[in-house]
Each structure stands twice: as C-alpha cells, then as structure tokens.
Length: 272
Length: 322
Image 1 (cartoon, rainbow over the protein chains, first blue to last red):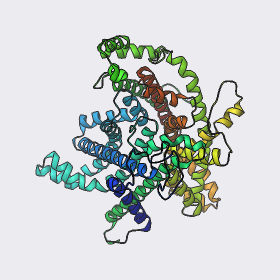
Image 2: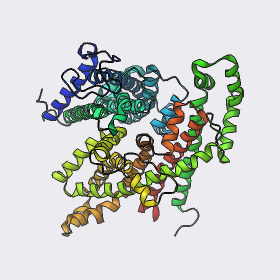
Image 3: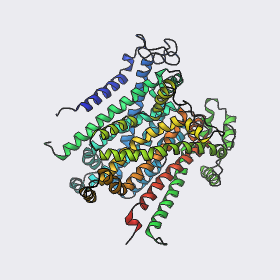
Image 4: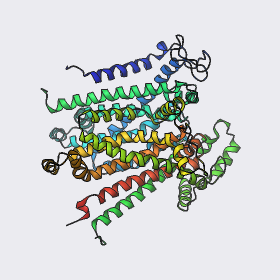
C-alpha cells in the first residue's frame, strides 16, 4: 500500500477521534449527560475544561454525549439512505422501462421541494423522536443517492460482462449485487462521506430550530440552541459545537477526497 | 425574429407547462405529507391532553371527517383564489399575515443575491486566471471552510465577533415599516453577510469548473495565440460559452438561498417567512405549515424553471435554427 497523503492522514485521525469519543462516550465523559455540576456559564477551568453551559452542566461532557447522538443519528440516516437509494437506483438502471420512469419521476418530485422544507412539513405532524428523525432524513436523502447510483449503474449495465451475466441467465439479484455493486463502489463510498456530512449538518440544523433531538438529550445543534443567549454577553460556549461540526465535516471531506482519487487512479492505470 | 412554431417558443412553453405540473404535484405531496400520514393531525396537535370530545371537535373543525380528496380539492381551490386558510393557533388569515413576511424575506434574499452573484462570478474568473496558483488555492480553501459550517453557526460566529467583540454591526436584524431603505440595509447587513458566505463557495467553484471546461476548446486556444490578455480571453471568449451552466449554478444557489433564509432568519430574529414557518411547525399549526411549504416550493420550482428557460435562450443553436 502506498503512503497515505498528509491531508488524508489528518482527516483519518480526526474522523477516527470523533467516532472513538462517540462510541465510548460513557467511559470518556467526565460527568453525566444531564448532571448539573456548577453555576451557569463558568469559564474554562481544570475541573470543567470547556466551562459549564446555560444551566451549569459540564460542557465537555455535553459535547461528548452530544457527539454520540449527532454521529449516531447521522450514521443511521446515511446507512438508511444508501441502502434504499442505491438498491432502488440499481434496480431502476437494470430494469429500465416503467420501473425506471416511475421511480425517477417520483424522485424528481421529492427533490423539487427543498429537503429542509419537506422535513419541517412532515415533522409538524409527526412526533419528534430519534427513529422518526432518522427515517425522515434517510428517506429524503435517499433521493440524492438514487440519482447518483442510477447514473453510475446505467453506465455499467451496458458493459460486456453484464451482458454476459444476463446471457448466462443470472438472476436480477446477482446482476445488481455481484456485477454492478462492486464496480459502482468507489464513487458511492466517496459520496457516502459527503452524505454523512450533510446528515450531520441536517440534524444539527433541525435541533437548532428546536425540531430535532429533544432535551434533556444532548446533540451539537441543541447545544448551540441552549447556549445562544450567552453569545450576546461574549460567552463563546455556543461556538464550541461549531468547531466540532466543522472539523468533523472537513476531516470526513479530506478522507472522501482521498478515497475518490485513490480508487480512480487505480482504475486508470494499475502501475501508477 | 420569432414567429409561432419557432422551436424556442415551443421549448419554453413546454418547460412552463412542466413547471406547472411539478408545482401541482408538489402541492399534492405537501398535502399528503401533512394529512394522510399514520396518526391523525388532530391527535398530534392536541398531544397528551387530548380527550375524546376535544379530539372530535378539532376533527370537525379541521374537516378531517371528510374524505381526503375532498379536503385537498377544497384547500387547492382556496389557494388558487388566494385564500390560504386561517391559522389554527390565532385564527388569523394566513395570506394576509404572510404577505409582509414574504416581502421581508425576498428583500433579504435579494440583497444577498445582489452581492453574491457578481462576486462569485468575478472570483470564479479570477480562480481560472490564476489556476493552480495561490489565489486559486486561497479561494478553494475558504470555500471548503464555509461549505463545512452550517448557516446557523456562521451566523453566531459573525454575531460573536462582529457584534459583541468589535461592536461593528447590530446583532439582531429587527426591521419595521417606518425605516428608511438605508436603515433597513444596515439592520440586515449581518444576515446578508452570512447568506453570501453560505452560497458564495459553491457558486464560485461551479463557475470555475464550467469555465475551465470551456478553456479546453480550440477557439480559446486561437484567442490565446492571437495574443489576447488572459483575462480578456476568459471574460470575452470563455464566459459567454459557459453561460448556460453558470446560470444553472446561480439559480440553484438562489434556490438554496431561499432555504438558507429559514435558518438565518431564526438566528437573527428577522420577521420573515422562515421564522413564520419554524414557529408554526413547533406549534403544529398545520394550515400555516402547508401554506409556507407551498410558497417555498413554488419559489424553488420557479427559480429552477427560470434557469431552464435562460439556458435555452442562451443557446445560439436554438435561437437561430437552420
């Protein structure tokens, strides 16, 4: 394996670090998620590394627990949107005809309304719980994945080896999972990184608007909402999630870029 | 130059018809999204406090006992007559309440667009001119940073530094009727700044990509060999041929601006459509949410349609058929 470029290495370290904190939040976080341990908005100190929040909870602990929620919801929604979007996209490409027409026009329709607006409309009548949030975000985002995977798969279905598999009499499942999927994987994985970032931004935005993760559960968007009044008094507590979200987004981006260039250069010439 | 049967008119009319169909389908989707979901609107509005009597009353008031198709036709018929219904929470006429807010939102988005679009195209040209050198790298770097930060955080970063630390600009964008245009523009300077940052990156990057694509063409090489200055080659020979993709990107971002406005309005407490929508989503005021959703969808579809029509008009092959 060739050396990993510096940018990708930085991206990997940061992404890994965030995921590590998210998975082991219970062991790492110094205090409980909703434990009140001090006055409101205490400054940074040895006992509270990032100070305390609007009602005196330890901000570092809130950030770690919040990261767990944010990353969990974003990951679950990404997995849902990829499973659904990619399988329907491949199916549309393989079957063609009316299946393709119906699915594509339906996706066009859903994409004709901005996804934040659609999410708000749906959330106005649904109870706001984690499963519902994951479902809504995943379904709305599946339309983007559908478009990409259909476009990629349409190019692959005309290849000789797919034709050969068809003539061999392979089933549709085989053609989708054994012929198309392996060859469509590299653009899809790079896209997965971008969709994950989009999900992190999406859930943070919803929580910030008060329509995402509900208190007392913590998540990064919610922490901004809880501490936004402090900004006017010059207390930067609400900016800490900003730092977390943007470093996570940039590092996932760096990794996705690297995956894409690595796999495309593999395709171009194996010796390079 | 155009007479009936001119292909360009036919194409434009086709696109307009398609846009209307899309808008109709979107209205169905919004209606279905709020009405026929599992669970009942009345139940979710009342929540835990629902008793059988209040539920029955609210259902009757909302007309939920009628079949869904009848309710849709009633709603859509009202919308076509400019009647968006009444808000559940305060009984106010939605169309009346929305008019002023829509004007505010369009003012905010319009100001942002008036700055962002020329700036993005200029920076895109600059990035192509100095491709691979430090201005290009700087522009790409800043772009990546702004794309990775959600709108509301950009907003608070701006408030923290510009309003609280250095006291340059007002932190809340309160506007009311008696203000002069200058006062209004000063009041919204910070939300405009945030919106510009939000769309600038993507628009500039795509402009750069579209022009770079054209730069490979033989006529650009000819222009270079004629000895024209690099910037003239880009602005006079490459840009006009990249108009269609650039217009598409611009419209896409203006449409995105309409969504970004929702969040930015909440951050800066600006009395526009976005805040109206978010407030009433948390109050579960379904008629208002439907009306707002429809207006946002209409603006979004309209801008995309405009992009289509402009790229048709910008194509000389369609303008001068053989």
